Image (cartoon, rainbow, N blue to C red; front, side):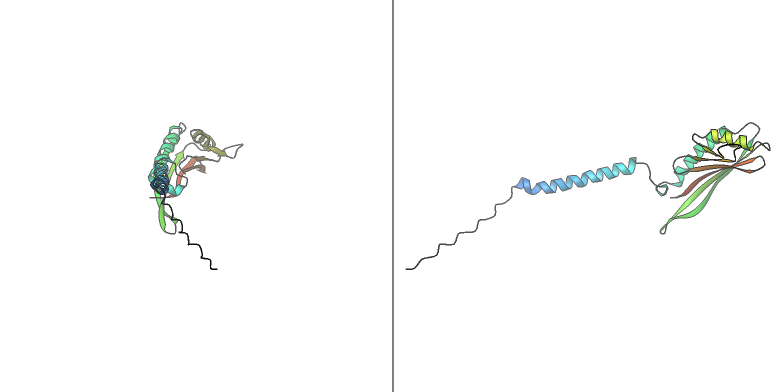
Length: 172
């Protein structure tokens, strides 16, 4: 007796995916890429710089001008102010990128012995300025003007107070 083997069954044919499902991944990836692009452009235009290297010397000069206006408005009576203007110095932001450091110096001259009073008057023009020493006659002050600009005032001679406004190294 012979037994015939059963006829081979045809392998099931793969069912084609619906068109909507095929394009779903393309739509999702394209939408995600577009969302990231829009957020990146918005962030680049609206977020403040998080490093000094991300700002320009021109923006530092604008901040320095504001502080100079505040300081010159509080120069004590009988004192004169001499503005030395801007001094720019080349610096290195990174191994591949050069920058510029901007410093503006103001020299306030007044009566001998009135240096501490001048320091206090100039520091009072700047909110949150820190004078040193904390107790006793003042010898200097420090103020963070924002935009990575540092303001330092110090007694530099008899009747003379020097105020330096420094931008640090930044993009020209």
